[in-house]
Image (cartoon, rainbow, N blue to C red; front, side):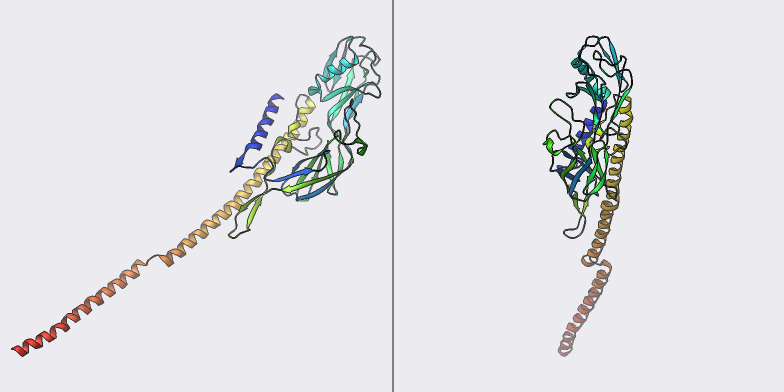
Length: 375
């Protein structure tokens, strides 16, 4: 996981620093960007092809985390050593631990289990909550000790909990939910993705499905109308025409880790930046997200390659051909035809010499007449 985290930081560094003539190319600023007017909604990504404009966000069904509550609240210290198996990870609990200490021990390995523990302030029982939302956010727990007030309270039966994917509309059109990410796919295949928050920073009276207090973790996202997302087209404009106002536009998608791998089916991770391989299930889901991220990058490379070959190179070839034609035409107008000019020069030179000879002969006649008269 440490190696993966380092690789993700490298991806983000490349995406945020790659530039040409001070213009950043891969961080989304040269493509489609967006912002939400509601803090409960976060704009993630808009593929090129998504129409710029304002999109209403309406959450019809909140996303939910997977939860499991102990069947009995722990009121005394553990009567004996106990082993909890959470999502395949065994956690050893020593005799005498209080409920608070049990919760602390469970949370020490939450990066491996994908599950955190807390004391439910209503039932006073220990509750396990997945870190992710959605149908792939699952928690399974089993104890080696029967449930009692002197045990963790989970008992020897396997208890399981599964989250729920968000559902809703974007711009009035049905969108696909995966965890807490809602994605609208257009007819052309372009996708617009937003992430739904849990409403902890907003007035909870407007979010009936939010279950959070100062003590307990939110297990639902917000629901209902959540304002608007504004998509802005920042595509690069390249002057390829012969006249003014004849540019060709090119949108380069965001390739930061949080914008790659979005929409991988049946997955607990919303994007590449969230992958965690410390559990077997997490490693399997990570493969799907990585495959989706590779597909995202490959599609972008194909689009850039096609733009280079079919637009830029074709335009450059056409300009080179036009340049050759113009140079040839100028040469005909400007350059001397040496063969024709030499022939004309020779003709004029012959005429000049003939004229000079005749003039010389004409000048000798009066001289001859004078000589005859003197004789």
